[in-house]
Amino acid sequence: MAQTKQKIFRFTFTHFFAMLLTVMFIVTVVLTFKLLTNDHCNCPRQETVIQYVAKPKHYTNKGYESNHKLAVLVPYRNRFEELMEFVPYIHDFLNGQRINHDIFILNQVDSNRFNRASLINVGYLETKSNYDYIAMHDVDLLPLNKNLTYLYPQQPFHLAAPHLHPRYHYEKFIGGILLINREHFNLVNGLSNKYWGWGLEDDEFYVRLKDANLNITRPENISTGMNDTFKHIHGKDRKRDTVKCFNQREVTRRRDRQTGLHDVRYKIISYKSMTIGSAPLTVINIELLCDRNVTPWCNCEVSKTEKN
Ligand SMILES: *[C@@H]1O[C@H](CO)[C@@H](O)[C@H](O)[C@H]1NC(C)=O
Ligand SMILES: *[C@@H]1O[C@H](CO)[C@@H](O)[C@H](O)[C@H]1NC(C)=O
Ligand SMILES: *[C@@H]1O[C@H](CO)[C@@H](O)[C@H](O)[C@H]1NC(C)=O
Ligand SMILES: *[C@@H]1O[C@H](CO)[C@@H](O)[C@H](O)[C@H]1NC(C)=O
Image (tube, rainbow, N blue to C red; front, side, top):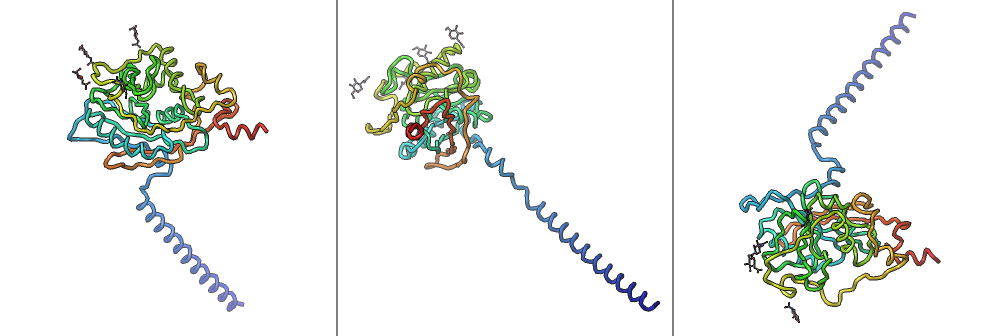
């Protein structure tokens, strides 16, 4: 009996000892691994990358004209050649005026019709924490006259004024290039989101500025005229999406008191920082979301098949 007891004791003791060793080994391995990974991973999280906004550049040897920072917001889709010319040109032009600026290409990547106004709303929301004024800027319009100032505007400043723009000369025109500070853009709730397709969103924006008692200002002392103040860089055969479907015509003729900055629906697909020549820019790939109950004309084609 005593012999068997001893055997059992020996057996359990060896067993226990082996288990203890195994557990100690596992604990050591886990601890070592944890320490190693902690050392190596000071890496930013995925969300930080998605929320990234390009930081303003610092031209230390130039010095800026003011402490204000300008976000140049360029609504964009399929205008590659114009983009290649626009970015280096406007970058040099703004550096010439010592304007602290960054260029954002607002690239609409969904399959809805182009919506310039909503893209600008998105551009504003994505940049507002780092910039205190924006330029709503067409990609095909280059300023030629150095007196066209891009300084911080106390009131909305319409650079591409009717008496200077090569093509549009009516008094209420405020398209092409418009500078507006962050507070004023927010005050009027940005632009309407109802304008899918080409045109009229800037006329509606004019009414928003007027209703808010803002005074639109325009360049003075410009010795150049309609032909030589700006360069229009697109070909004459440009196709425009002027189709009107559903009740688009009636609705977009009226002032929109519902939609704007506060309800623009979108997804950021990605940010891409790049350079053209030596000019830095950030492409923001944007998917605009359309509520077909409110604006069924965001895609005329799909609408027709739905109706059938
Ligand atoms: C706009 O101009 C009018 C008349 O010149 C002036 O009374 C008003 O205060 C101005 N509005 C702003 C917001 O500066
Ligand atoms: C335009 O010129 C007039 C006189 O010629 C001057 O009083 C005014 O300050 C100038 N405006 C700007 C914006 O330079
Ligand atoms: C720029 O402004 C100055 C001062 O107001 C004026 O004398 C000059 O003619 C302007 N130049 C151009 C090219 O418009
Ligand atoms: C602009 O050019 C057109 C022809 O290209 C000419 O008819 C017109 O008079 C010019 N306008 C000005 C303000 O120079």
